[in-house]
Image 1: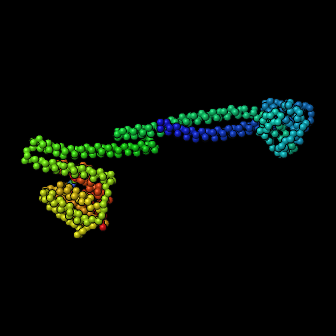
Image 2 (image 1 turned 45 degrees about the horizontal axis):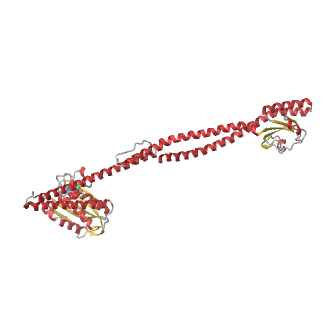
Image 3 (image 1 turned 90 degrees about the horizontal axis):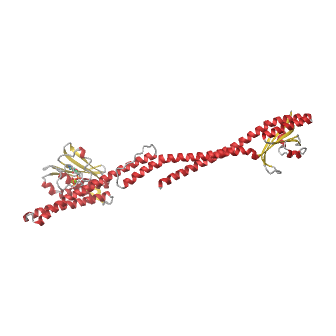
Length: 473
Ligand SMILES: Nc1ncnc2c1ncn2[C@@H]1O[C@H](COP(=O)(O)OP(=O)(O)OP(=O)(O)O)[C@@H](O)[C@H]1O
Ligand SMILES: [Mg+2]
């Protein structure tokens, strides 16, 4: 439906443009040809007139019966061959010879020739559309002056009905207009063919691919190899399809990750509770298994909270509550909160803070979430009896916060993946309470603050430092 309407519009526009140019060309050509035709007629009459003039002058000189006959004979001959009535007058305009018997009553009458003064100066005169009062027809009249030496001695008047002159013109007009129409039809066909090939077919391909992608076949692409805007459109379309495919892949991965993360705790909780209900688990072990189930439920709750946080951040719905905060105080608070885990793993903690208070701008609760995540990671990936170090310092307009831990560094190839949702390296090393959502959340929160975070291995295989920035006050 749309396709044919585009062709129709294009074709309509082109046809109008070409039609107009053909009409202009044909009109100009017709006028030019008419002019050319009249010019030719004039030239013919002029050259034939010369013979008549010679005979007329000779008759004027001799004034004899036979010279007049000679003149009339010549006039009749020219009249027949040129299809024109011929009259000859003397210098006053008095007619003395005619070819058409109907004009014989004009003999010895004085004609009222309007352009007499021009003729007397030796200039031939033509009149193209003269209405003849007696016959009612339109005529072409050519006046040719005659001279004897320098003396004006009369006029030859040659009259042709206009219809007769225009007869051959009509044929030429028909040919001109027919070829214009033919050319119009041919060019429309050519335009149709090319617009179909250059525009409509490629657009159709893109359209088909777009519809397939909309149906979920995101691997569809268009293959158009033209070096023009359509080719450009096809390229952009494919780039869009690539990113759609990427998004779709991410979505599928995300769903499968989430389901996977949800399934394992639910399965174990279900198992323990069923065991207790069935009495398979002995009474004295019930507490132990309920504690495990409780941990699993806590893990589930944390997972769901993290997911909600992340999706709120990605949807741009999370609003920060920015205020003046004391970075040193927040850091101490977080270390104290993790004391239990630190003691369990027998870690040594070094807290190096710049000044008593270090003020910056930020959302207190969200920054506690950031630091807690980083300290959690540091504890989790630190070797037993290892070292932990938290540092604050100011650099220009920024406050830098670093969290360092001993232990194997992060392999170079993993560096760019650790910020991805659900990315967990070396599954055996991470304990059960691991979802791979910590760092993506951390980075999102800092991005919302307009700040940076980066990670460095202290040496190639020992120790990791995460550092982030805040706006200093
Ligand atoms: N301090 C660290 N030392 C070594 N590797 C780390 C450290 N921090 C993070 N990583 C690596 O980055 C990965 C992603 O960290 P992230 O905090 O996002 O997930 P997680 O700690 O595995 O799970 P979660 O934080 O959701 O409980 C970790 O699995 C780990 O491989
Ligand atoms: Mg973590």
